[in-house]
Length: 368
Image 1 (cartoon, rainbow, N blue to C red):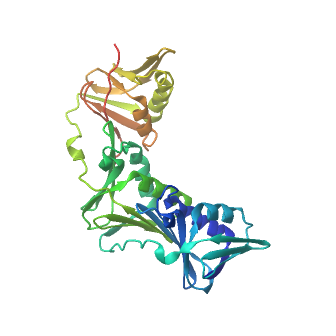
Image 2: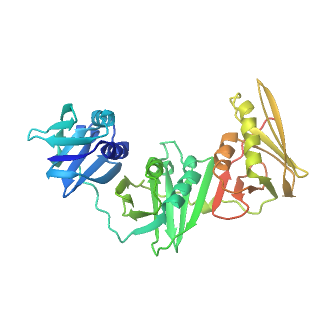
Image 3: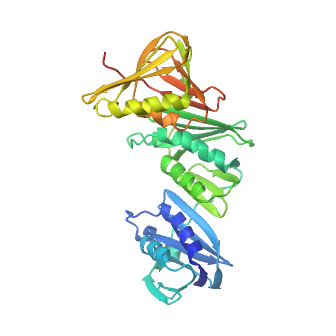
């Protein structure tokens, strides 16, 4: 195999696929990046058997072939070469010669034919969604994905498509985030995508600054995300996701309308004091169109007051402030509703101007 290409373009492509390369794998072949010349293109893959990233770039091909090159060494080397033309040639004994201007290097690689094949996912189970919309859906839900490996199904987010409605749902046993969108598709499907996959997809979409649609394709065990010259494959999480609609409360006794940013800044300041305490909690006292937000620890105490519009009963309730802050930071509405039943039932937070986002958070005990 022999080809030449631009240093910056190659470095960008390697950085993208290296997100799927594991440094802790027991299979040496997976600690490398797969390269294959096809026509006038270079195919590049990183793969840890759970997540795979594939991209293509235009190169000048002199001889077709494939090779696996150690990821860490290659990434650092290409990054530090001058922004000029790089020539890469692979010998019969899998030694890779890399030349750029007056710099020459040789790296020992592994045979490309030993690299695992990517899954083949049919096109019929697919739909398209605006990249910016999908990125926003991840941003508004992924923080609620569980980090507890003892419940694997909750370490991912549910992607649910039916009748042109697309829902993304994440929960960790303490809070739940639901983001809804309308899409053009007749597809009906449910799948749980690992949180790591969604976060990597979001990083890549932010790195590849271009507008357009993202194509999402499913089979029983895998999901494929396609945009630009990139393909991201991921294993789905096995098992049945929680019936989240049964968790959503109704018949609220207290509904408070509050300014989102003002509420966030008050909670954020109260958190400074609350985090000094092992039992992190703040108290919300909602009464007479006013919220009093208080926290205390061995270091001292705080009190914030904020005007609200209250319908229903007065209420005193406690929350982990981080769970409130995480949601308030991503809500794209000037005002929100706090919907409550009592001080032991879940609270619903939602924007006042649309119904595409719902956040549920459990209260916690507060000292009297």
